[in-house]
Image (tube, rainbow, N blue to C red; front, side, top):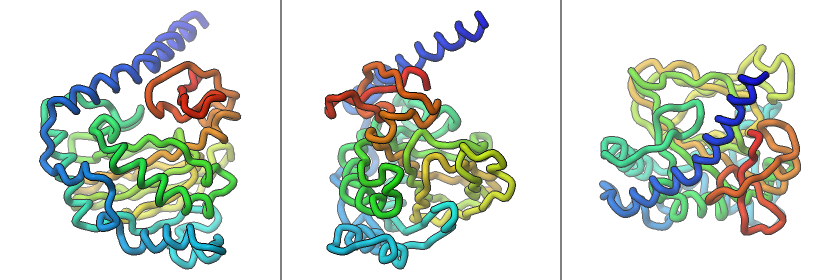
Length: 294
């Protein structure tokens, strides 16, 4: 019991350091890093987005839009699991973003881990891509779509996100074990490059017992995004050949998670943190906090 208490205290301390350490990396990158593709940092343009994605978002904000109409414009991967797919970015934008990410990866800039399971990748807010790219993507395009697809999961109340790119390559991460996301909803977009294997697989919701008896496999298509609930158990099969880079956006609704932390399933005990952090808020909507227990 004593050893567990020490381990718990160390984990709490580690999480409390994450915010300040990330902010320090972001400041250094902003002052010292020279991008290879500076146009990627311009505010999000419709030209970067696939026509199908623009059509889906436009429909979602049109008068009388409903789920039935939206589903005619998306690919339903699994009606039962509520998993959908739609082209998100154009091929030229995927290529430009990948070139920028590789340039950053090869630089001597400090890099934070994307999450606790992936070792290779990039946190987009540290690179300075949250404000111009990710926030407009969430507010202008994902929010209206998710409001129709997942109204019961906070789809219409998304107020923060955590966006990162994960990289799978020989000698680095090859696969990802079964897990659920620290998110109400998730967007996972394949950016490239050329690869075989690495399919996503989905089980049931993590609260369900025999959740992975018959997993559903979903192959990646470059430029296309898979939409699913954060609580849907999923993982990535081993990479066969090549390199696979995916943009993952954890979409969060404080109205949902303030009542119940999605990771520990308890009412959150909050401590102050920087930026969007884990997407919790206190009474004041301008403050975003992190759950000390998760």
